[in-house]
Length: 324
Image (cartoon, rainbow, N blue to C red):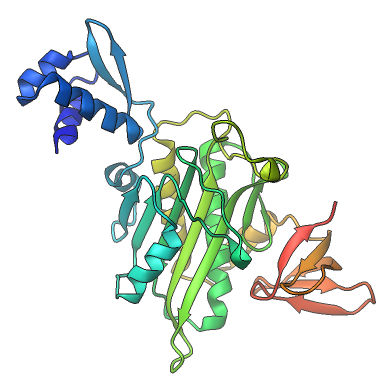
């Protein structure tokens, strides 16, 4: 492709400017074709500096998000990333691909979702250029009831990667939200298909949406007090590519042994709800106040109800909202 040829030449002249005329001469392209290629590369996140009468220079500070940039940082080479500038929903599209027999390790990554989905049928705000939205296809040979462990592992993978790249601490609000300074910076939606004969999972889609930066114009009013950005004020070259690769690598490491106590301890240490008063939110029912007593090894919560009784609450039954 023309833009790939232009990119390669810019890389070869990384320490100096190269004029549009010189780019065109070397690649047998018109000035218009060179300009269109530069526009496409900028849209993909490449930071290309331009100075009149000097030309163009590729900067290493850009936030590039493409398959090449993600693969560059991946340790798990069995993963196959596909990048979309815009998609309806990475989970929705990948579920269709999984049903058609797509292999484990396929990852759909997008810079924008037009129909992003969250838990319990909620929409997930997924604006262009300020977030990272991706879904990973797994085909684990585990009983269906252990699917919660995958969600917990994903939360730990996201939390650890954000901390490594940002230098700031994270917390986890049971069961699937990663928080920073009291605001949600990541949501996780795990969807599974079950094999009725074996009782095992046929496949699992792990959907991860991360607010990387505050979107242009800020978050919508209804999210202003809830949503935050993981890297607000933090500058990291190729941030979204490094973030995607870091989360995926950690998740694949953890998926090898979903009962690894180290994952549980990492989750437990970041828990935002232990010892707190919460509302249990069950679809179709009024919120129920409760006190969180403990996090069980299967990632369910042990809670005390207002009448003094205790119960275990699993991820498949409720959502949790912290009380004011």
